[in-house]
Image 1 (cartoon, rainbow, N blue to C red):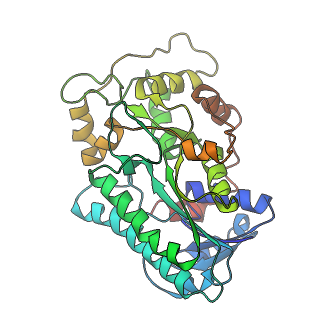
Image 2: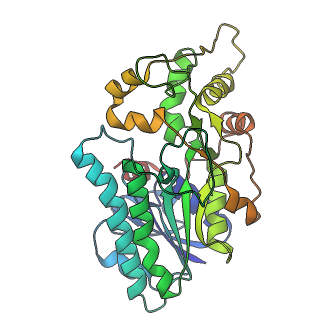
Image 3: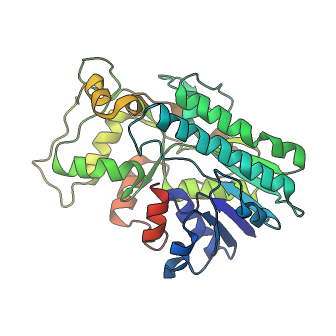
Amino acid sequence: MRVLITGGSGLIGGHLVRRLLAAGDTPVVVSRRADALRRDPATREYEVVQGDPTTTGHWQEAVDGCDAVVNLVGHNVFAERWNAGVKRKIRDSRVYGTEHVVAAIAAAKVRPRVLVQGSAIGYYGPCEDQELDEGAPSGSDFLAVVCREWEDASAPVDGLGVRRAVVRIGVVLAPGDGALKIMTPLFKIGPGVPVGGNGGLAPARGRQWMSWIHIEDIVGILDLALRNPEARGPINGVAPNPVRNADFSRALSRALWKPYAPWRIFLPFGPPDILLRLTLGEVADVIAKGQRVVPRKALQLGYDFRHPELTKALASLFQNPPDASSQRPEAARKEAGR
């Protein structure tokens, strides 16, 4: 299977490329820094196409003849402190990038059979303790609106005879990257504490839900969406057992106690939400609030989670981490951090 991937040099995309290669498939990665990627020995196993999905260009011609497209393009939500310009970049990179992918599919002489469209559980907005499956409505905050527009931009392929699966991705756990890249150093140098979930000036109690997923399982769900003809519409890319932030923080603290250090402690309270917002700006709300999301569709489609429980998932990441070095060469890491 020949699979074109936008965002293929990011955290998830890099791991997906390795999975496809292992299965004997042919990944085609669209990159703004194609020349730099081609010079890296780790990328010689797959094809790299020069292009920026947020703009039209010759890269769109590479869609012609591909069996599938995986669209993961989007500016990193946590890369910068939010202002009007950054929020526009977050929204436009996703919406315009997806519109350009759809236009390329429409123009292809030989169209792909499936589009696996990336999205995020931010689609649902903050929902306190409500359990959310794929039938839950969209929220109304900034990220919810962005996710809704992002998904809607991919909808025209439904009329082109192309199967469309939309994977709403949760908090991805991977060693040295994503959420753990930020959290691990903090938890190593100090006591574990909950973050957010209380509001205002009160100490954080971490009551908000975290819908997490191991990197191997989100790649597995994307692979399922590529190959299973029954995979259509929204699919929640989360583990089946979401946890509250306090429980996540406690589990992470324990996972980092190698060897066991009895002087390490977990405090049941953390910095107030208002301090978090002063430090990080508006993006702090993404951390301080959460969603209790369940992967009902993935389970119905028969996906067998390798890491359904948080404690064992963290242990696997810190004791036997996936080989990210071969998946994320230096040029790819720079591309992913743009």
